Amino acid sequence: MIVPVLAALLVVAVVVTLLLALKRNAASQARKEATLESPQNETLVYPLPPGQDAAFVVAALERAGFVAVSEPTGGINGVTVDCPNGAARDRERVREVLQHIGSTGFEGEEMHVTDVVFADERDR
Image (cartoon, rainbow, N blue to C red; front, side, top):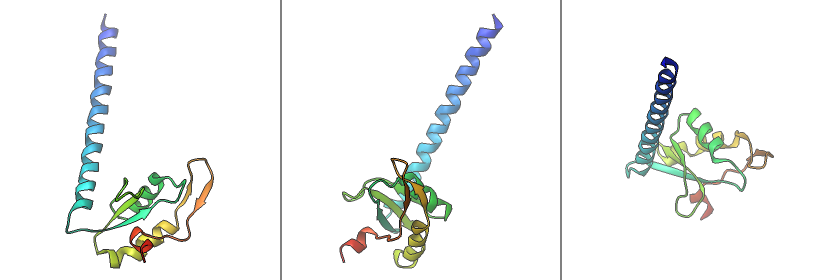
């Protein structure tokens, strides 16, 4: 009799823990998006090369101290990066981080990006 009750309590505890983790993750993502959408913040948009996994790009940028999200922006499938020092000052540091990402593409192939071109540089 006590084993089924303990099992049920364990299931409830796991579900509650998962829901709290999801809520925390959603709140963190919302804060990132609010930061990037703020008119006071300058951003860079990095269009993803075909096959490059955005998760690797976002993770590398976050390890380097940048706030980044992966979502289509202005019709571009890419990663938006917050530039706390301004786009002009952070551009080369972001470029350097992106050039040194060793990652695997969607189909398992090795990807090394050497020419990083931001969305605002494509128009030049």
